[in-house]
Image (cartoon, rainbow, N blue to C red; front, side, top):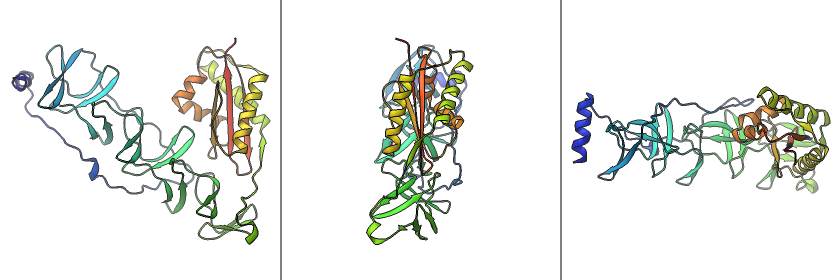
Length: 339
């Protein structure tokens, strides 16, 4: 009975054919797609979709879900329903699993809702933009670089990309600086590429990237130092304040207590080669950016960090920047409200 209603509706609308395209994610080939070594950027893809504001209801027929508007018309294409995006085939059936749509891969949960952000699917990690499109190639996510194969799966371990070797942690994050891997020391430049046939910090690095010194020093990590960047910290604080003003908010008032807390945390991050922040703080650890303008842009590019900087309730702050001997920066900004 339901199918008859659908067919009648289609004929009434003058639609002649139904075209259901089934996608097979397993048919995709995993391969490397080498980017430039120096600067590799992949910004979020924007996908145009038409939002239909008509109300309707879900209907299940023979195990397939359809969405029917109150007008009686059947929904097709992209649909925003109760805050979630769904994709309906030309037949009206709701899509699930991997879907290739207009040249981009998307993943739909069993509920049909479109996935975004990090997704663990069949043992592999994938990253989906806010648009739902699957990410490939180099991706800067929350201050860390990741490499996603053409299949979308996240790379880990050693990776040969565009003639250069990179090493990714099990988390997928790209390494920089000195790394002890399987008993050997390697040095990764700020862009992640492995050093070879050179001398760094007194260590001779061979053609395979293995660093060697005297036998008795072989298991000792190269000496790493760090320092507080006072002028850079002040400049970044000013840039954040100006950025707020340019968005119609009040500028930030310098607070020595907030500054000291940010400095303590940034120094901890630098000392331990880590990242993170405490309450009422945002942070970034990077070897790819080296100016206050670039640090600010990283936060602007991250929706959560950007929203925090532009919180109208926050009025006071302080910023601390540390730099280590491997040209890695550890930045913490404290922004809080008046109590």
